[in-house]
Image (cartoon, rainbow, N blue to C red):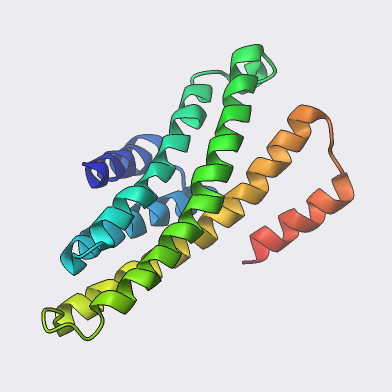
Length: 175
């Protein structure tokens, strides 16, 4: 079901929004890696599929940024978009910045139980490895997004430090 959501969002981003910026490219890979990670993770089986379901809770944070996007940028200072930004920040922090590392750790713990099992084929080991790589890359992408989100929250709260933010921008764009 959630890979269906990621597929739908992928088509919206690719064919309707058509964002070719670096952030748009990250969004493209976010969807591709998410769909791939879910697909091959389902092949792995065992607790891996349940852990992926846990990891997909991260997409709940998307609701708030999508709701805020209904407003024009000039209206972001109004109460509802500001509430959406704060709730988005909190949900992104809890579900992605804390939840994703926990989920990846659980995948490693899960591997200790099935590694070497007679039911594990070379294909399942390959799928496990692909799934892990996908989620590690997704975590990295989310970290780069989190830096931008923190900057937005700082701006919302009036806590900008131009010198530090300029250094972060340069580091993000150099990757």
